[in-house]
Length: 200
Image (tube, rainbow, N blue to C red; front, top):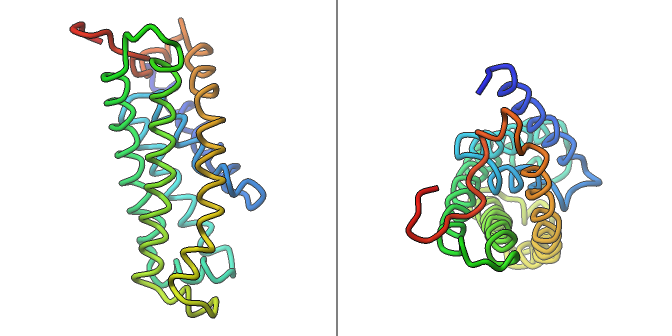
């Protein structure tokens, strides 16, 4: 792929990640990464995960809320879990496309693999990041609550994020594919589905 187009694609991904990280978009922070992991090749998916990690790291030093301060005590928490989550989500999507491809049903072959990516990314991010905060920082103490209460407090946010990503990401992923169809960037897309016993 032309290097200029490649850099433009990556710049757009990074820019969208910064926008999605704004406080009033808190429930859709993962959507750029999920859409990319469900649509593009592995290297681009990992770049999107790295964008999430980088943006989290930057905002961590720009905020004074208790969670950000807890992140500052363990700066790897915003980074490593997001990279692991991105890789796991991409491979989960690849496995789902291979398993469900060629079924003929639009929902099963096209929508469900994106839902798999969204679910793995959302749950993985919640478990790894919140688990890291509970085990390695004093965030619950700062908030004057127990670790169990802090985890329970996170559950509504995690559920909303899970639902929204599963609703928004499938049409977003398919829209990206349709928009890039026939363009030079089409070579960066993963196969939408794999027919049984055939190469991608």
